[in-house]
Image 1: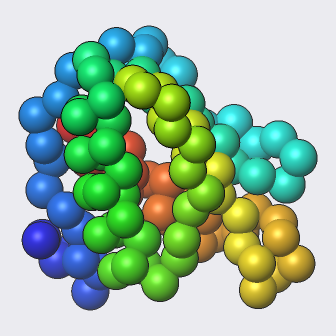
Image 2: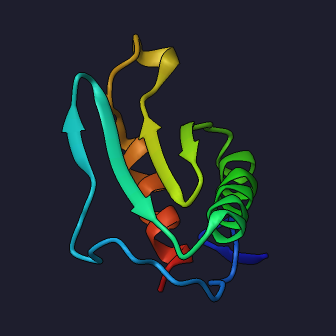
Length: 100
């Protein structure tokens, strides 16, 4: 773990992201959503595990949808009535940091 501004962050890991890197987070239906495609299931699951550690450090937990090499991450803040907040944008930024 790397600590930045008092928040634990996972170091980048090596993966084969086959979705377009320009695919970014979109806000839809009170959710911040991004879809990822990896080389295989193992890389997709490794990514979700790394995100889980980030989520614990943030105290903010995503919704995952996973089918083989596909992962969709959805973020919203339950405490704020299920809408997108700064907490979601911060976690999204750190999730993106895993792939750099």
